[in-house]
Length: 432
Image 1 (tube, rainbow, N blue to C red):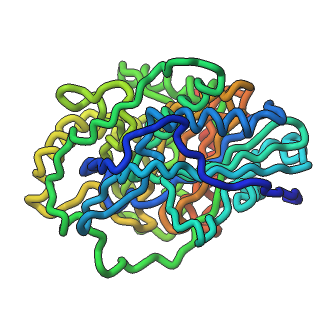
Image 2: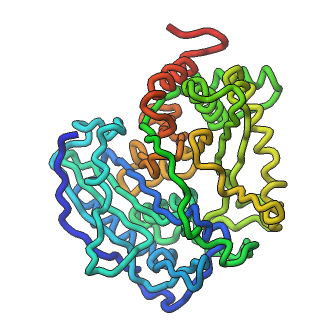
């Protein structure tokens, strides 16, 4: 995609008021999981804005860092595996940039194959700064007045719900609200670590990495298709199902059909992470912004998936979700340690598909003064972990966008063919 981006300013945004310093905050056992020691990267595309957008967002960010002061701190490891937050007040890395291009000329970055991610995300922080901020943000203004926010967020501090809560807080302050609608709550002591620090430390020897490379593939599903499957499921079972369950089932079955190298008896896994804030006793308070989720894992043979209907696989997903309260409670009690199995460490192979729901996290509701984003673009985190993200179609469209990095190039077209067959299938017939 031919476009030029010029970065004009870069520096730390500190809290607007005095915050607790020299305080060290413990993270929860889930926050400290090795699998979360990574950065989540996203692009947030806003159609309208103006020359004041970078300043307004910067000032609102500074104000938001007062109640969210831990995010202005730094990670520290007091002993192996024991991550904490040092409330240093250093701030968040903030970059201002501009482009003469219009968002319309790049189709609002609708095509994932041609997005210049490196230009829209914050560039590398100079080594002379000697900092490793938990949050990094770049606001790029476009010639049309719109803007794109490139966000890098430390996953050890927040899950998707927590990150969206923080961005919505910035938006409220940018719009002039004097009091946040949701006050942040730390409360990371909800889950005392069931493991010793040595057991949670990163393994000394990295595992053998697969040699395949996953390619992007997006599929759009209008709401009438989703609603048709919902009616079909309700007629067959008497139960309701969600759009996420339908899309996850469709993605898993069509991917299985597309990958011809799997033997009939190959064991395949579908994994998604479910919010568990409400499962604690008492439930976590509204405003908690840490990690609180648990993996739901469904296992089936390749042959059974190739022969399954979408309705049948949705039933498997719902049955697995129904077990979540019991399985999460066992994890809190440390029962998984008895058999040595870590539910947060499923096999990272081509036979495991990870599916994530983004449509309900709250990113699509963030409003910095000029309305919500046209769409939010997740950025591939790994070229070897099969992932599918269930999001929303760019505004003003209604429906689901499935964003995937789950197949090799050899299987991409067959996967798209099978998925388009599902999209165009209504009540047992194919729409021409």
